[in-house]
Length: 250
Image (tube, rainbow, N blue to C red; front, side, top):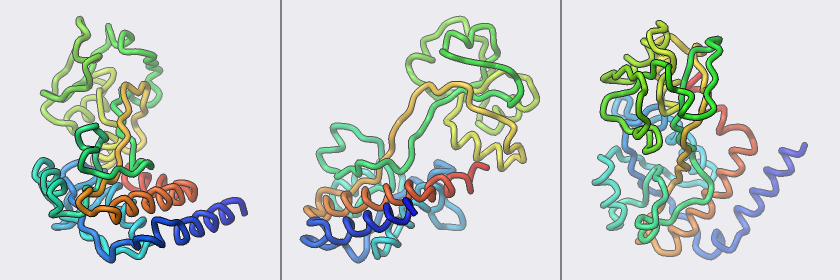
């Protein structure tokens, strides 16, 4: 009952808010997608898919907006959104520089976590990066896990060329823990038939990620970001966001 009341209240605010009534929402928006960061967003049979794509599609469906996702290299997509060639980006990290030409939603689409993964049942506990000393730590070559980790001396590192190799080593107990971005690690584990074999034992850093709209859209872009906030809250309150995530990683 509480969920139904909350949903009704949110929908009332959505359709009778000043932003909605004053400006109206676009009938169609075109957002750029990187297409190479599974499970958040990636290309499958020529179409953008993933957690972010599914969530934003659901938002647009509820707002009555037609959504087109264009898979574009990150830097080019960012430039084209700044210039107003596209409506916005499927997701982006917030920076002061980007806020000069982008409207950011306040609600996150996802939170990217850099974590330490271990095998379930290993008994390994990590409260801080210093606890990694004496353990064999798997990392992916040329990937930065943050300045705090990168500057630690005396770690026993097993360097892999790609994440799938890292996952296999952890499963075979050839390393004690693996450095990872949480959801991509779990997604690839599922692809390898190893779903449910690993757990997060420590979160190193968290990065909130938002849908953004070009300020070239003017007040319509601002209104879009506000209405996305309302529907994103609704989706989270219903538990739908977690259901979408679980489809990719469990």
